[in-house]
Length: 521
Ligand code: XMP
Image (cartoon, rainbow, N blue to C red):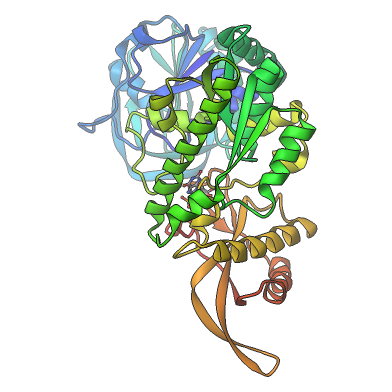
């Protein structure tokens, strides 16, 4: 395992990704992590970049024990500056912030073979990506300059005798040619980390781990939604403990068209998972009556979900003699990182529906088989587990479902309109080959009426808004747009207006995130 200490750079996750792509398992932890409290012994440590300056009074500091741990260290950008600062060198602000490509000249030191290892096999010049406002102006004692650029005399440094390296550029971004090779030199050739971490190995290890935790008789209960994460987690549990995993699908009345039946068919009939559907549509819709505030809708749905799930789990528990001990959750690595960031969990913009509240009441222990994985790793895992492509590449769907896509009051009739429009939209997107290019698409029903004309008659009906975005992380998003797509939208619009009663107008949302969010509520 390689340890990556995060100082808050937007690229920290990318370092983690790059290292895992080499088949080396690594963990990203906040820079405040105490070495004495680490639960594993790292083969090497990478210090990330940061939006801070080392001389800021509130600058994040690394545990000094890092430098005494005896393992190789690579400082990237702020990581280099923090190491330099800590070890007695100098860091100052540049005249101008440097952002973009730079040519790196590699400087060899035949008398110091360890120092040359970072750029071994990479030639004398490297095209790299820079993004920094500070730079090293005096290397710490014992450090050699191993590369420079026109503007950065200390673009990379290495210690004469210790395996300590620092680079000003960002090897983790694809704009740095050979960035992966630099990281590989560090991780594989300098740290000698084991490069055998693969998804297949993960599956075997995780199944063994689940069996060990749950024991030969224990049972696990978990909610499924038809989304990638919960389905992959459920499939993994099923592989590990078979029918001792009990999946519960709560029909909250605001799911997509035919979703419940489809999920039951797929997980139950096709995958053989023990699944129980709880039809609670009327309960949810009853509680949503008259509610228009988005956050109130989320709270009602979240709380009602917990109530229904708990009741169903209690029935199952009783039926099988009180052997349910664990609750399955499909938590992913980004959620874990977010909750442990040294800056604290990011400010809540919208409260996301989760089942955390379940644990308190039910006295269940948590089991999270996906907590080490990124979304695309979950997809790769899904493929290995034999899930259909259609499922593996499914767009995300929010827990509160169509309730936050029917703006204003949520009624059965309004949900039905949004559902039918959404179904036509997604059907056309798939038929025209756009589904994989779009990260998320859906139809929302707006709480307004518009005038139209049909035949010779004036109409006064509702408006559907279509949304389609491109994004990798769902934190920022661009609208999906192209000339051909607009032609396709024209067809979709006319199908919706013709086929969905109560709608006479369709609009396309052209707002990016930020400042808009992906959902309308
Ligand atoms: P926003 O609207 O915040 O959405 O840009 C970002 C991503 O999160 C999804 N989303 C939710 N997912 N419960 C969820 O499980 C929620 O309350 C919720 N709100 C938004 C949204 O669909 C998008 O993928």
